[in-house]
Amino acid sequence: MNSKDKFQIQILSSMSHDEFSSLLFLYGPLMGKEAVYLYEILTCFKEKEALPITELEKVCHLSPTRFRYARKQLEQYNLIHTYYDGITQLWLFVLEAPKKPNVFLKHDVYSRLFLEKEGSNQLDAMKHFFAQPSMITPSMKEISEPLDVSVLNSWTCEKENALRSQSTMNDFQTRYPFDFNLVFKGMDRVIPQRLRTRDNLERIYDLARIFGIDEKNMRRYLSLSIDPKKSSIDFEKLRNHVVSARNLKINTTDPYTMAPVSFLQWKQENKPVAYADKLIIENVEKNYQLPSEVINVLIEYTLKVSNQTFSRSFVEKVASSWARLKIDTKEKALQQISHSVKTKEDLPEWYEDTRQTEADESLKEEIARIQKELRKEKHGEDQ
Image 1: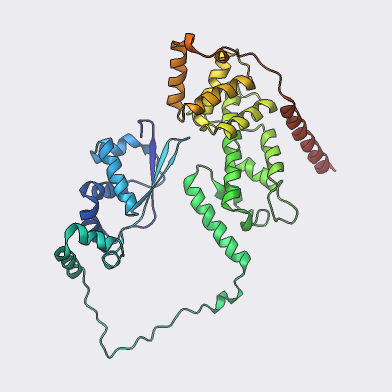
Image 2: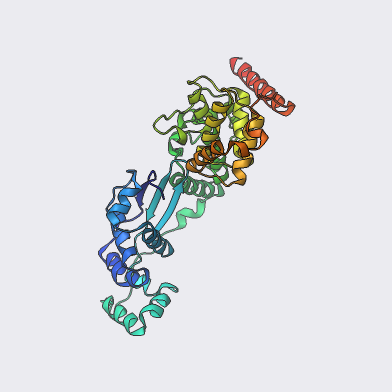
C-alpha cells in the first residue's frame, strides 16, 4: 500500500448479535485481537465511498506490517475478501458476517483449530456457553409444509445459463471499475444473458480499458456487433468500432489512470489519435502486458524525447526493457526514467534512437482492413 491508494468497503451482510459473539469468543482466539479490531473498524465505514488508505491505517493505529498481518488473518477465515485495482490504485474490502456459534463449532476445520489452540476444556466451555435448550418435546411431530419445487419442472438450459451469466456479471462488477449494469440496461433482447459470459465481459473490458471507451459508447458499439441470430458477439467488428472511436473517456483528475489511447489524445490537446498510434498502443499492451499507468508514462516519455513523434520501434524497445525490469507501477516507471537520465552515458544506443520509422506492411494492412470494414458497414447502414 502507498499513500496514494484509496479503499472502499462492501458489506455483504450485517452482523447479528450471535455472529458478533462468535467473532469475539470463537474467531478472536484464533485470529488475534488486532484482526478482530480491524474487522470492527471496517464495518464502521460507509459503503461506496472511496477514502485514502492512510485514513484507515491512522484509525486502526496499526503499523503497515501489523495491518497486513491482521488483514491476512481475516482473509484466511473468509471474513473479508480483498481486491486491488492497480490502475485506479483502489483497494476493495468485501466483508462477510462471521459464522454463527453453532455453525462455527460444527465446522470441520474451525472447530479443530479452536481445539488445537484453546484445548478441549475451553471448547466444551464454548459449546456450553452457546448451547440453546430445545423446546421440541418428544411428543411433538413436525408438520411443516415443504417447499413446492414443481414449478421448476419447466426450468430450461437457457434459464440456467442466464442465471449463471447474471451471477458472473455481478461478480465481475465488483472487481473492475466499469459499469456493466449501465451497458446492459434495457438490452436483454439485443444482448441476451447467455452472451454475458466471463470471457466476453473480460474482452469487452479490455477494449474499454485500452482505448478509453465509456459505458454509453460501448453499449452502442456492442449493439452493432451482435450477429443477427443473437448467438454471439462479433469481437472483430466490435474492435473495429472501438479502434475507430473518437469520443474517448478523458479524466484529467489523475491523467495516468486514463486508458492509454485516451491519455495520448489528452497529451495532443484532444486531437484524434491516428490509427497507427492506437494499434501501437494495443500491441504494447498485449505483447508486454504493462499496466495502463506504466504505458501512459511510456507515452509521455516517448513524446518528450522524440519531439512529439510516436515511433513504434522506440516505444516497443522501451516497453520490452521495462517488462524485463518488471516495472509495474507509475512510480517505478518514473524512477527508471530518472535513473536513465542520470546515467545517460550507460544507455544502450536505441535509447537515443528516436527516429520515426516507416510502419511495417502488417501494420499498414491492418489499418487498411479496418478502414475497409468500416466503409462497408457504413455503406450498408446508409442503404
